[in-house]
Length: 212
Image 1 (tube, rainbow, N blue to C red):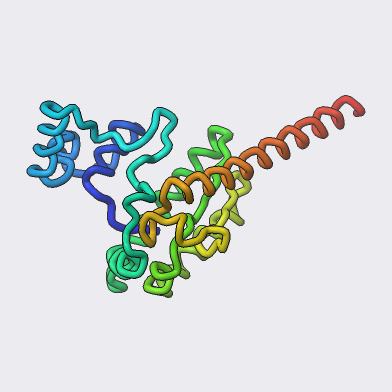
Image 2 (spheres, one colour; image 1 turned 30 degrees about the horizontal axis):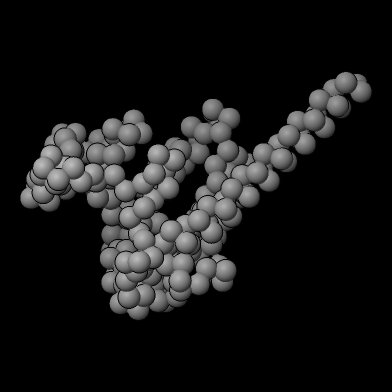
């Protein structure tokens, strides 16, 4: 679990997903979600150069992390791991808050007959090796426990998946378009298998009712 939520993410949760975070009133405004000089530059680029800040296709496939612009995997592994490591003194409070949020999503999904697929995305070895092992183990164990406890959830861990190679990464903790396509196909296969199983179970259930 990554613990720090950016201001732009908070704004996005409210406007694009209808999720209230009970954060500052100023997070309701695009211009204030992030550093003001950066947002002014974004506005100027759009108004005067027609340069959009949208970095995905209409179907939601990301276009920002391109293999042509790949970063150094050793250096980005160190810096990203440090950025995603929380001080242990604050760990329990934030961890408990995150678990409460995930549990609320699970309960909402149960009530609306929605199945959840949890995944841990692939990461390059230089990122994994520099993570705080206690924090990492806690995160993975919690999501395993939640998935085992709730029938409407499944969990797939691709963190150390060896089918992802160096050429699949934009930096040590982000896939490029090559790796993203590979992961998308894996998830698509998982969804298709779940749907196929659901159809079979539904058929068996209906057949059993008829025989009775």
